[in-house]
Image 1: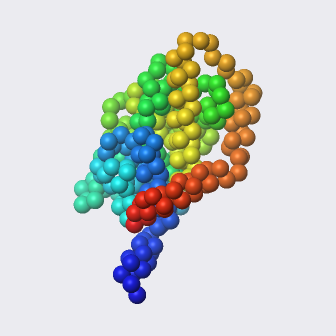
Image 2 (image 1 turned 45 degrees about the horizontal axis):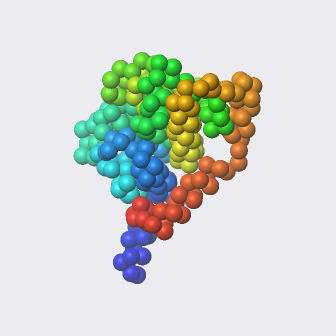
Image 3 (image 1 turned 90 degrees about the vertical axis):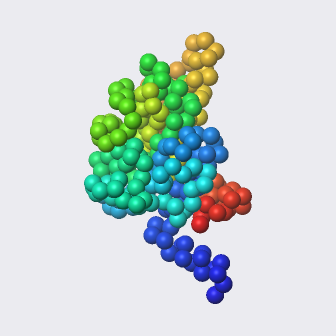
Length: 255
């Protein structure tokens, strides 16, 4: 057996290998979109039934370099997590650990300080009004945390996690901070994060014009949001296309 084939078989035998590949793709594409923040920000994915064990990016590794084998597995109920040799960033543990511990329907959690979502988070009113199809996706499906309390260490993470108790709420605009998105899978969460940033960009640029906004009615906004909730396969195809591009251009993400 060749060394290359042996290495490939060893990698594919990693626990949750396909899930790791999906996450690695999400990290690298987020960097390509310039939605990352130096070596900060974190994505995580639950790998057990109650969501308390999860994969996460290692501490202080740039999103553009994350590989499938780099991801660390964490137990949200292990108080000694931060004392181990592969300890995550303390704020990652505080925020993602709390969400996975307290919000079992949050299977995948993505937190970024992307520019337009963070501009939205800096406004006195950080709600996303339904002014176009993308922003309508989030009608009655996002919550605003208006009580920023500092870096997301354990106490702040616990407080934030309580805002995600309603399964209908998929996005938390973290006032004065950034955005947190949850989903059923990596594809689901990444697709939602992508569209929330696009919606925020449209809204912020619409505000720049200084002209009145044409806001959809509640009934039409809810109709559009419900239709997008049930739109078949779009998130999965989105991620599959990104993996296909990376397979051609930088296949090392699968290593």
